[in-house]
Image (cartoon, rainbow, N blue to C red; front, side):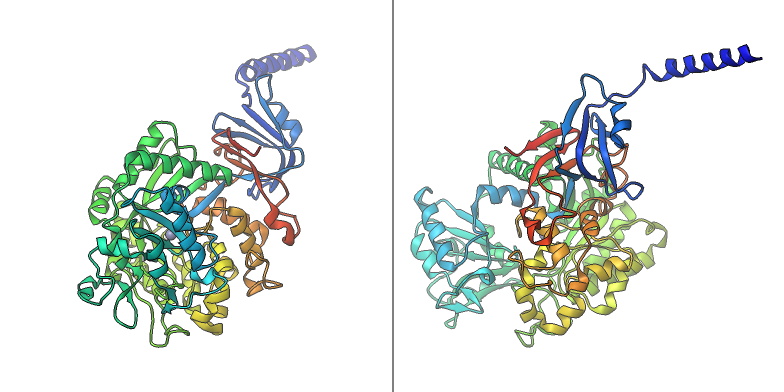
Length: 572
Ligand SMILES: [Zn+2]
């Protein structure tokens, strides 16, 4: 009896080792030695993470993780530094980011004079006739306004004076207005010195701003921007590739391993496929098809979504642009602007198209992501989504339709997000930049009841996808996380934060940049948390962003980015 038992046990042990030991998984990477926040509710922090290839093999205690170590395993000692899942930019413009790196960056200009000086500098190195393109100016960020303004915007005269031979086109930080010089307007066929013929440049859903004499001031709003842009020569394939690579590098520097690209067309899709094939796609892109191109949408409805088995480039959503921005008073409101009586802003596409796209999305397996800033635009979209869900009840179970920005909501519409399962993709850093002047546009009551309603939305049971809307704001996720938890400007104002009851907790903020962003792309099973079996994407910081004092939060820096189980960025 006894002998038999022992024999049985030894045979069992023998079998066990025979089965497990040749097959024991060995780790490519073993990371340990600092706080590791997993965003996984079953174990919110772990001591160590082991990866194999592009996947997470194990997350837990260091003792257990060491079982997976052999002589080939690369060890990463955090030395007290902090790690989280790789961050996901939940709404940005990838090529815009790349071009921002290529073109004149006006993001930090503090006056009209500074813009003029930057262009004058660029003129020196640009051949006559060649376009000068820039982006990122915002008159609300200026220390002082020029003497001459029209509707709160500068006029082109100074810009035209420093660049007589080079057409200049400078996009507003919001992306919803542009500023052109005389040469650019001449090329577009506009008479700069008189109001003659200007009426033929009337564009629906846009505005050519005019001075008291009826002459164009150089400001083109919304769809009127195309009057100029259609004359800007297309970029070369080489430039596009360069911009792509610069955007990848910028993401890696910022700890971004996933990127929701809010609206791309045929050419960009082709570029992405080319870059993926060339092994240059060192981040995961979740791209939305631009709703402006109906032919493109038709093609994709027919062939259906593309969910990448390599987890690099997935296309299964459609982006619609439904109103303008608050800065240029293009956001579509239920009640008039507080600082422009009688003006409600406007829709930028027919609302019927939102419903049509929602129905097409449901039928063909595409998510719809509609841009809406003002409360009217948000309501109209929720109405159209709801109508489509009602019409096609069988297809609506897991639609994950989104509203991009969802910045200003009527209180009655806030619970509708959770009710309908519509995900708000809100870029927290917009609050830091816009809140100081947004109150002029909306007045105190609307700001307090309905603007940037993060905590109310989260409490209602719907996750928020965070981000920056880069290049509207810099890509820096630390700034947006700081805005999420502090509700202050990036200068730390005001004390206590704006509408502090709407702050996110640090855990909520981190989720909005990881697991909840992944949810917004149907990808929560493969990324967004440090969980065995998920993709090995991590971001490592110089300090513990979950516990550091709020006034030190903005000192957080990304010091290492790991993508697909490989170190792709390390700060010198
Ligand atoms: Zn955007």
